[in-house]
Length: 289
Image 1 (spheres, rainbow, N blue to C red):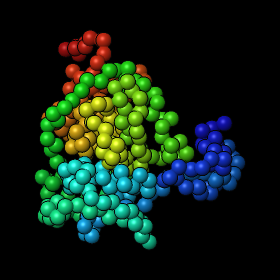
Image 2: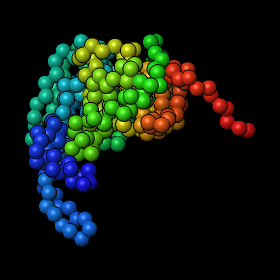
Image 3: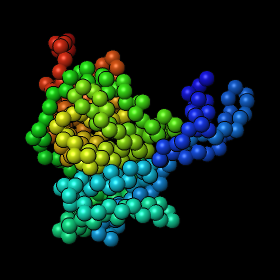
């Protein structure tokens, strides 16, 4: 039986996680047509409202919204610490969900001064940037970085899929996970947007008071520059991506002091920045001239 068929059967028997809904579909395969009930990922507009003033709208999966609000506020540099988000209140609206976030007046004034309106999409991290300087933030150099054993990375890669509750039903979301040095998945967040999944994880880590110097980040997406910026802004110094990074992501990781790994698979990976923090027993072979 195919994975999609097993998933359809599971939909009938299991309680879906938040962020997934059931819809009827018409499947055409091998000349046969069948009506099925399948699980789909929700994608709705999420509006960020700071001190009663709208700031950004992101298309996202409506799960772990308080984590999302806090992580976005931190990774975008809107606040400097979790304590500066005095309150977070999700409010359902006709067209989506509003996240009302209370921040200090001086932070709200700085936000207003940016003169930005971010309209986010699943694959977009630059929407609304009005100048080149605003388009690419350069995070401060990381002060606390660690070395990660290769065995820990391999364990986390093996175990990540079984922790992806929404993706197990829908097959349509990204994930960002935090693992300790042994490779144990400590927490994981999912979303249709790779940036959103990372923001949710950053917020969850802050709420759980997890020290970013005690483990590493694993993402199911490519390592684009904004993923590096968000992670470095949160103090994360070791990032493992299942897909490849971009050249700008590598440059920013090098400057920030972040170890950046891409194309991570069970049988290998590529280290694009700061390889000295990967603990393995093999020697490095230089490319032939």
